[in-house]
Amino acid sequence: MDWNFSFGWFLTGVLILAAGTAITVFYQKIADNLASGPSSYEKVKLIGVIVAIVGFLVMANLHTLILTLFVNLVFNR
Image 1 (cartoon, rainbow, N blue to C red):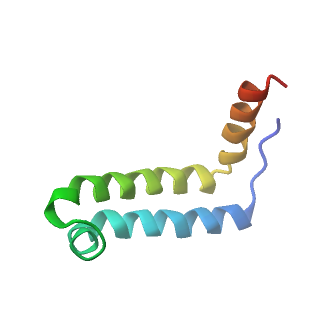
Image 2: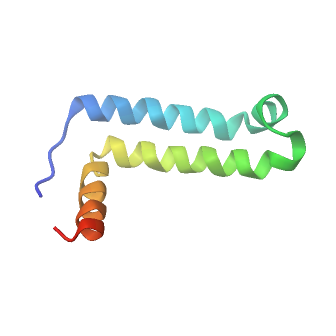
């Protein structure tokens, strides 16, 4: 599979990365208001970091490569 750069996916990745960064920065307020308070601080930070990593993958348009490899692995194509 060839790798192609796309401005659309780049901008989408930037938005996803910004959302992950915001979750990571404001984890206490998010956990207090949307989760179960101080007991879920680490979970909310982990979710923010995972979202930021996904944002980087989408920015580089690598998500299609990873999904293609995963589907080929599961369905033996």
